[in-house]
Amino acid sequence: MSNDQAGEILPLVGKQQYARAFCDNVVEHLANTYIANIVQCRPVSEVGAEQMLLDKYVLTKGLTTLLTHSPTPSSATANTAFQKRVNNIMARLDPLLKTLQVRPSPPEGLVQAYLIHIADRSDTNFRKILELKGVRKQDQTALVEMFGMHRDGKANNHLVQNSPLLTPLMNVAGLGSTGLGIGAPSGMPGLQTRFDPTGFGEKLFSAARDSMGTGGVSDRGVSPLGEDAKAAVEGNLKSIGKFFRRDITGFGGMNIGGRFGAKRDGSVDDYTK
Image (tube, rainbow, N blue to C red; front, side):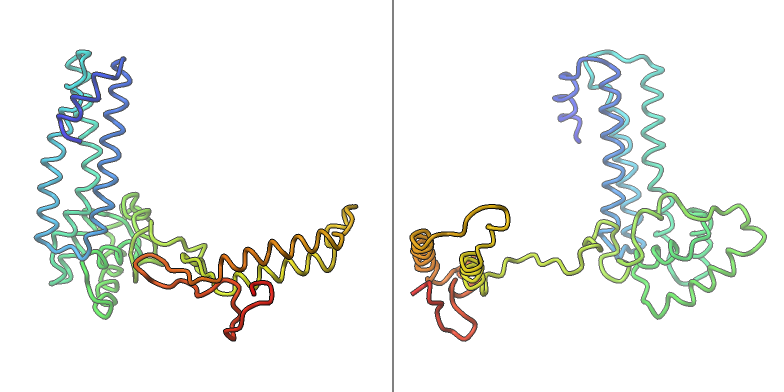
């Protein structure tokens, strides 16, 4: 959000506490978005990480002035507290970017940078850094082994088990593909995103014939269709079949399903004649 946009929105906020809450949410959202975009930019080179860190400093400086655009004057204490909160929120990016600034060769340098800045004991999170840097799969094993040796040393007993920054950032299943925790839903692997109308007409007419022939609704106390009603339904189905006999053309002239009512062998259902 630019200062001009803040100057347009904050005057509409009536109370100072609401303006502060709005600014806090803006800063939090921008920090999370920035981290997500770092992942989107992988592989991140050392120069790229340095530039992202510089951009973060510029963004932080701009965000500290957000509250000054509120028409309700804030006390010096309130402004100082807000600036401190902005710096704390944006500082969450520093460990990640400072680690990405280190070259993977020599490997000891990257391992030590991870232990200093990320400061956790997770092999999975260390692999996430390697993925973000674009380290090849065949080179990751040696780096992970070296990480384990340094991690288990007496000098690193203070390390936490999992970093609160990296743990939710990327999921393990997506490391070989998108790397993002917001990738394709894993619970729907077979979900089709396209509508396939092949055989749709055939299934429609078969279902209609079955319902008329068996009187499936009679189980609930409703009488089966009479001959006149059946004839009327069949007439309607024929009309529908004629309507769908023409080829269906999708976006860009792509045929997305042939003819409704056509059987797989190329013949046409009796109801569509």
